Length: 419
Image (cartoon, rainbow, N blue to C red; front, side):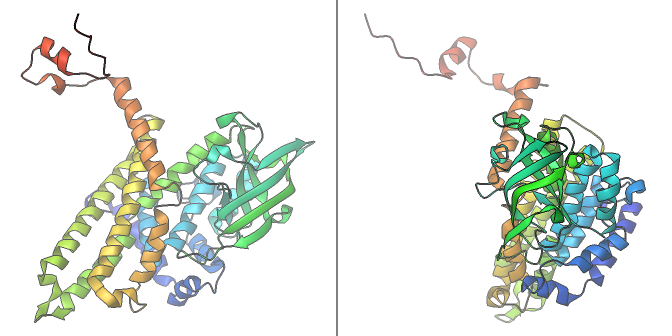
């Protein structure tokens, strides 16, 4: 986060998060990356003990009543540990958002409180084997019988499939109704959830990411989150933390600082390699892009904190921040490896691990392509709805109205044949 945006309270909070990040043993990071740990319960417990989970939620549930800007600061610092840790903090915010906004008081007491305290962990079950971007094409169904819903289907790429105590699951309750077809449920692991497969990942390991199977799993009706057939409302609300929190770039900055220090010490051809434009210009490009991401991410967080604009406008900005931040992180880590050269491809530096983790960020929680789809869709809606504000620059050309009428052709028409 750029210093100009931070108040003294922000800086104090950032210091709290930095203390948590510094306290995490290096061996935990290495063991997670080596798949020796399926789920880092100790990290979740420690973060909860320090009141660094669910910081935006009300104090009466264990939160701190903080803002999106604060959470962006937190996630950026946690990213220095790696993407898996960022994911763990984010999932608390994502599932917690659904419970805080749509949950009943009983649900908040039973699930939100321990989630924020770090004594229980939640998984978010959206994606299915048939695909993730086509969310409303889900095939997992929930049939109502008496005072229970019975869930049948599968969910894939669930962080915490091993490790989570309960899951926020989306299932079809109104087939064929499009966006009104889904409902959201809290499903406890011991209700009959099966872990069918834990994936071997390229990076971002150690969070028990796997596939869940539901075979007529009985879920009490009081575990319905929000109203029946209104799962879309829950889903859209979750997409704000899920995507905005990708905008924390302190982890990217840490990698860039590492390689800048390296370039300041590493010598070739009788001088430090920072003196070569091929190196120094890469670093200049990287820090420029990271500063741009920081500015955009802060602006988006502040927009949501202050309730500025329509839901569509906020959705566009969140998508822009997610796309730009994740692509920039990937580019920065790639450039860092290029500057390090061959040694960057080894485990002598943490850059190779960061590279493997960075690749996921452009896919999960909405791919860059889906972000583009949302951005252009919402932008067209905005400009076509509001008309032209201020000066109409389209008329600033040296042609008459008659000439413009002939030349500005938006749909071709056949030329009439000569008589």
